[in-house]
Length: 215
Ligand code: AP5
Ligand code: ZN
Image (cartoon, rainbow, N blue to C red; front, top):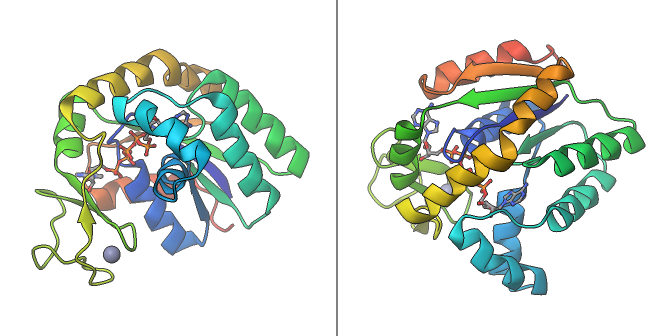
């Protein structure tokens, strides 16, 4: 199975992608995570994109398409595209890459969440720096304060772009450059909207219903 999780910042793409990794054995391809990894390892590319990301703007198509091309060339059992594609140029490039590797795009899940809820989600989010588990101050706190439920690490972090200013830019970028993909995939008969405001388990069930039974 190859699916795209499409939605604004804070829609729950990462949260649901991690569940699909567990439940379906798919590989999560998050361009956001890849770019953050490049930053923290101090690569040239990481340094170049750091300021752009912190402002909440999109990184160039060339860079993110390169990252995805590399991952797809390694092959695999099925992918969840999380935060990619984000522009029409990226969507065209993905189509081509899938064709070249003989893979098929099964579905595009559009996670719908209104702006007010997105602000609450983003400003309350923190993640485990060790295993990547995603938490929220109100909707998904850790069982023990300051300790990751999954791996026991105390390295809990907040992202530099999770503030109201950057979020405003991220939302504008989404509506300007990414939301046209909704029509793009609808026209291809691939799009399924999902109510992203529902509880995490319910969102997971809605996504499961869209996917073919086995990978
Ligand atoms: P990226 O890392 O992709 O960030 P994003 O799209 O802004 O998405 P988020 O990670 O913020 O949100 P999410 O939808 O994964 O939500 P989550 O599950 O964490 O991109 C960051 C930056 O990198 C971009 O701004 C850009 O600069 C660059 N970039 C990345 N990809 C790029 C590309 N393709 N092209 C160009 N530039 C690119 O959930 C959010 C919170 O809500 C959490 O606290 C969670 O616990 C909570 N939550 C989740 N689901 C629910 C629920 N159902 N109910 C209640 N709370 C919930
Ligand atoms: Zn952890």
